[in-house]
Length: 345
Image (cartoon, rainbow, N blue to C red; front, side, top):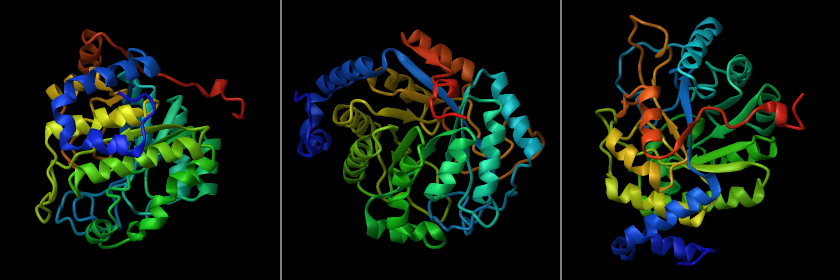
């Protein structure tokens, strides 16, 4: 196999011609992962700050016209602290803060304050929110932000327009430029991805990997990773047009590892336990566990607020970390401390 792979090699790895060679590709993916990341899996958890949303993304449970009637809410600072304390109790030292696409309800300033609060509890704080500007990301990095996750959802512009009916998210080029803004602001970790199932998985996978390589070259001071969210549960009004099989998702992860060997690979609780377990040895470097996709899901009881999507892997953090150990890998709860950052205050 080629050591330095070009886009044509990526296309071949994603094609039907690669299927008979998947076992050999998997061995190479395992070798490259161990070379660059060792036998480690970094653990993280999401905290949903708000499920308010002004966008109308047809596939999303948070969408303004999703048809879901469950309560929408935004965490107060006291409630956010409760969530942080609950996750610290499970051993987490890395969290991802999320919101709906609602800058009118949850402003960039509110997100920045949430970063400051979360950083009191966790050395590593990332966000997965609506597109922000460079100066807003820069302010958040001063407060402790070190990671930004943003999915293009699909790189196919006609499909992008069809599934985003309302809100600022409709601006394809603005969203595409967001990670450059974050990189220029000094964000240490950048994570991209496509929402698999909206368009052809091979095409979206191809462009996601190219986007990751582009960011590695242009935002060279940032570590780049790829996420592989797969549409499984959607609102009643939406039917997934391009269902992605387990084999196709595995092929996409392996191809991405061979094309961008130094990129992290994230796998969330959207996937079934057995499937996640099998991918530990095949290129995954970051996993969430014990996740909740609703505000207050870790510490507020007796209240059913709207969740973004149903999770498939409901195991506790302790159960997932034990699975990782049994697979011969080390779960890593903390991989960075701002005390080692020469630019930190």
